[in-house]
Image 1 (cartoon, rainbow, N blue to C red):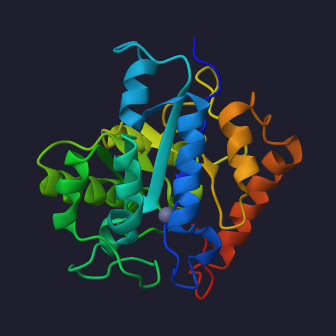
Image 2: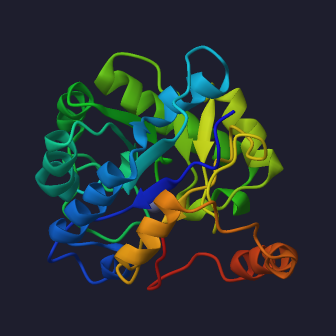
Length: 265
Ligand SMILES: [Zn+2]
């Protein structure tokens, strides 16, 4: 039985990110320093689908896995993140918002930024990056009607499958927002894993395969925190009060939709 698994979540890896993503961006030097911590931890990096195959007993799981994930599909993934990952032979998982891909219609609520093109994705995959879906428009799926959630899940899956020539297995919830109906639709769309965000390491025993807990690395996340995630026993469960508040928070967000001018991943 594998112990708690750190699933790291990054967004932009850039020394000069757009201001709207800056609180969630790390510099290339910081990213490289974190990867050095991964190497020093002795953990074995897996893609999300490799991890899932291990959870399902299809393959042997290493004793101490680590997963590195990156959301949204910024162009700086290819410029800065991938070279650092490849230099250390670290596989990773990139969750792409298909409506934000460069060269297509900008069908996303994400503000503009330099994004990857669909044509970049096969090369990334060949370099050890699993490509997963992150919806088409990046709207908050827990607030959308069932029909629109299903369309988001299908469209992002189909765009990526078309570019890559094979099925897409993994999904990441935009803003980490999901609810049981969304999770069920993710399964019906054919995904076998999905990532959310929490404040603890992922647990093979506790986490649903369609709600794997990731640790978000922000601009102000210190190397000591990353080292503690990689080396420590875990950070405990989400406090009860925060779980209770989640429902009220969803009502608030629904009331003020559509959001403009404020953004969080
Ligand atoms: Zn996102």
